[in-house]
Picture (cartoon, helix red, strand yellow):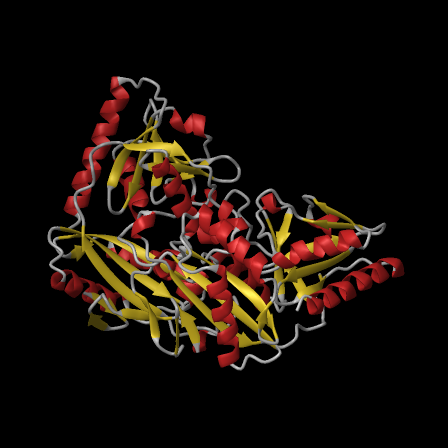
Length: 281
Length: 281
């Protein structure tokens, strides 16, 4: 079961026109929600990011936040999504004439779709991470949006899996660390500095990233958005975040021994993150 | 009328599944053919580029070159495409489970589609060009492929049109010139050097680019694939190329006066390109 443009329908059907620009050019946006007990988490934050990106792309959203929230809750119920599900909102530009140029705003027919699928609790194991050969494009605003153009990320993840790893750490073209294929990254340092790449490094401003930054500040960590090379990033406890997994440790091939104090600081942060996620509902 | 997965059908129908990865993640490829008198031009060259990129993406092409060529010719006839048409081949990964990772090759169901539309002769007027704020990602192989992830290019073109220009010149993240939103670029210098960015600058290895390079060499020009900044690029006659328009001059806001000799050299090259396109059929 999925929801598309205001109606619930059987998801096995062909639903998209052959000339939808989402399909032909990756022209659109998406959001992924963690849903706990049938409710999307941080809906307003996701919606704000979606509307901000849609404005940059001159892409209208054909429903209100309340309409989408309500539709999502009904969908989760109809799909018996259980205690833990992943929901996806996809927004495409809709059909258009030949060529790259989007139709004028008044002539656009954006398509909006909601899907959901139950997901297991994220593994507590660290993410075995390689360094990707695919760079993030810090020179395009698209890197700061969750667009339908995701080939770079697919290439990076496929590269990691082919090498027996779980995920890939992507640098940008200046050689600074950026993100995993679908997660933000942090490095927790001896002394309490928590470093994460700035948005202008070509990263998605993650909802969970923002939450962790706020939470860490309240806990007394010094949160800094700073460009780092891979060597500096690797000094400390490295972890990744996204809406579905919350926080998860990274392991690289070569790990320097870490102090007990740093491990304790990380555990405090991780426990706090876990509670925080549960408490928001 | 379009052709999809082996069958001709009415193009107004919904043809794509809601969980096609082409739609959800821009996971696929396309090619654009100039078609003259019902025949696709440089079909073999386009097919070779497609198969090369498909290999990089571990994406199977479910039909042979002969099958696609034949289908395209029949489609052009059924669509009464006339003396001059643009045809597009779109190849998507097909449906997949949640997440970025493509299904194993044996479990993929790629979708392939052919469409065509008559097009007018490209304008002889120069392309009014601005410098884009969107950079090409020289750090990803995807920039060297015609993938369905085209948001950067859409952003660049939209930016140009909003400023009253025809197209945008994109630099890469090192500040070297790369391409327009959907065309390769050249700069013809006094003395006969013809400079074009190398593929590793993050550009699509265009079919027409390759043809122009070969043709220019035969005519005695010194063709060089070299990284150039915008100032160096602007010294000379700048032009763009793609399969649909062949060659077309660029004009920027500020143009340095050009010598008559250089104008003559450009005219020779442009005439030769025009004849070449006609002669291939």
